[in-house]
Length: 235
Length: 383
Image (cartoon, rainbow over all chains, first blue to last red; front, side):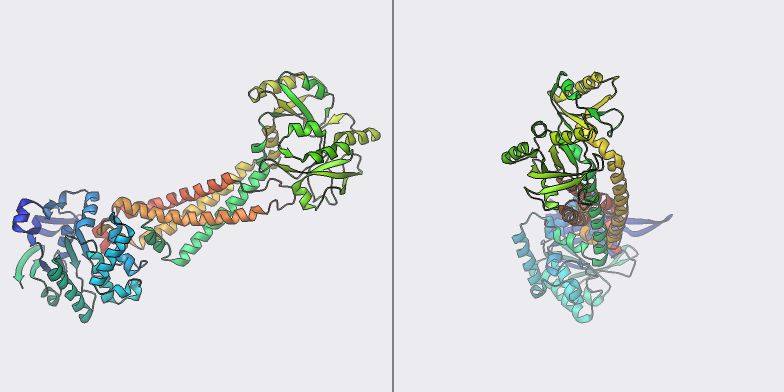
């Protein structure tokens, strides 16, 4: 971690970021001169209408994409300058993803899905098993470890997704509409879980959501409109 | 191996599709194995012949006979270590379908020339003591349930068109795998005596086998032999035993070329079938590949996963196919005599396995490249 980020305790620093896509002969500006700082241990909700650039911003912070202009620093490291190979290794070490549609491998059991990120580490099989058991216990799914995704409810699948996201104890947990495909009760359970991960385990979480009910669980909410941050609210 | 669950799970994702692809690969490799056995049966004899042996035959054709008197002249040619002769008897045992080779030979010099023929000493002794004695290869003995002491009638349409009777005094084995154990050998003195009585073909033999002192001098010695009999009534053609066996095999066509042609067509089809399966498999899980990349799999790891999947598919199919082919050919010659060396050689089994791996790499290459090049953010949008 750099001196400055240590001093300010800023984990995520996005500076003057622009993102442009080319569709045919047309340039589409998704993010325009956007800056954002997220301190370590914060639970940030990112809200905005469809097409406002929420997911694009999340992709930039998660190292899934690179900005057209500007810089992205995570824990003092400029990830926009890393090569594809370096970025992949960086993601494996620092980022946990939770997706709206869970994105589990249908051919693997819950346990093996959670184990996936650990396959990229040098942990032994026994150590991997131990980490997986801990992650599944944290999301309350130890008893469903050997079930395939198709035999789990939506809420359970999302909890497996969260277990996969936290199993490597990442620096940052990025959630893209984690309750978007769930009913109210299951959605609440997921939000409780994310809140517990943030409050009890100090996980820094950035969550993209449409849902004000979900954003209310975060410690801070920022709004994005047409690629620019418009309002900020602390809860 | 820690990725095995993922690779195996992906293979079983569409069970019917995988099963049908496996079946087509399996059938291709059964065909490969059986054709290799046929190729071995027809052309493989070349591999087991001695490098220090030459065959001398009539220059015009194999059917023309050579004078027995040539033997003494050949023995005097520099570089020649030993000489023996054989003659095509062409007899029929009960039915023309029961084909196997029978040749009259001089026991001592014949067995000295071919140490690959393993005959117990007491049986050799019995052979030398029995004028009508014959030794037979184990394969033919087992085929007709012959045992030592049996009297075997063989009708020869070439030699006097009569039924000859032989006493089985020995059963020989081959010292190397693939050595032909179907022929029957009987004594030349008995053969020649009967011929003399009928005044037919006396003093003529089919071909000579020459043992040379130095295999490196084979071409020089062969030329010396042919020069010795040049401008005679029976000019000779001398060639290494391998070339002789090859020429014999080529009477049925260029086996290697035919087999290669068939297999080339089969494997090309399999390449398309498996390639299509793998392309489809990758296309329908682009989103999942995006997830793998998101959680930290590198492009190289994604490439390796897809290649491992296609290789696993072809190696399982190929391995099963080769196993079935091995079992199918293990029973031996299905023609009961026409293909005495019918078996699937270990070398071809390894070649088959290598082909299955190459097939896997080729069929997986383009889908793997496609998966590797996927932009992770774009792939996740397609989930």
